[in-house]
Image (tube, rainbow, N blue to C red; front, side, top):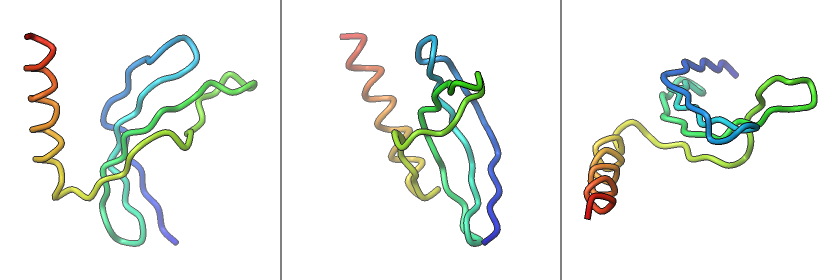
Length: 75
């Protein structure tokens, strides 16, 4: 079971959590992963169950959703 993760971007959500956007390959298929990571007792960040994994062909739908969200926030 080969797995390859490539971090694209991360940003702090709060003092104990961050959001990470990654390109992951699992069983030969590429996926987009947007996930919350939490700071553990060891002061390292660990993945939580809070997140979404999408097939790359849904990227344009995600981009459209973010554009619409941005427009709505400007209203």
